[in-house]
Amino acid sequence: MKFGLKEEQLQSIVEVIREVEKIEKASIFGSRARGDYEKTSDIDIAIYAPEISSLELNLLRDKLEQLDIIYKIDVVDFFNISKQGLIDNIKEEGKVIYEKADYKLQIKDYSDQVSEN
Image 1 (tube, rainbow, N blue to C red):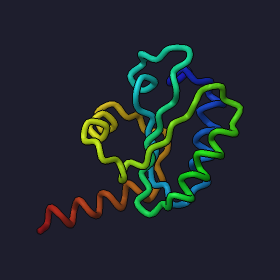
Image 2: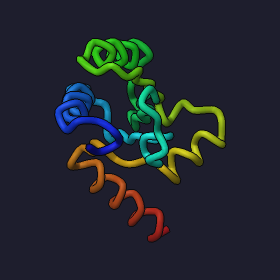
Image 3: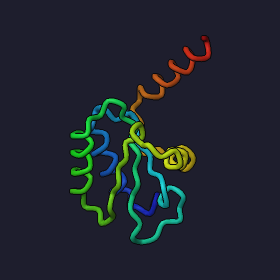
Image 4: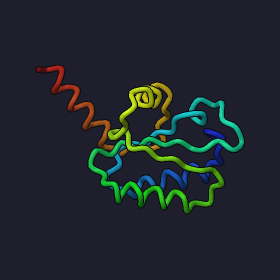
C-alpha cells in the first residue's frame, strides 16, 4: 500500500488525472507523502498544469470526488500557489504519481537552453 492507499485507489486517481490533457505532472504531498498519515488523513495532490482553467480544475476536483475512495482529496494547482511555504513543502516532500512522457523532455530542453545562455 503506497501512501496508505490500495493500488487500485491510487490507479483510479492517476487515471482521472491522466484524462486532463493539460496536466503535465501530479504529486502527492503532505502526510501521505511523508508517511505520517492517519486513517482519516486527506490526500493532498499538486498538479502541474500551466494552462489549466479554473473550470477545468473544478471539473477535475469533481471527478476525483466521485471516485470510490473514502478519503477527501485536495487538489492544488502548483502554478497558482501564493504561499511560499506550501511551494517549498511540495518541492521537498512531493512524490510524483503521474508525469506526461514528453514533460521530462520539455524540462530538459528548457534547462539546456538556459545553461547555454
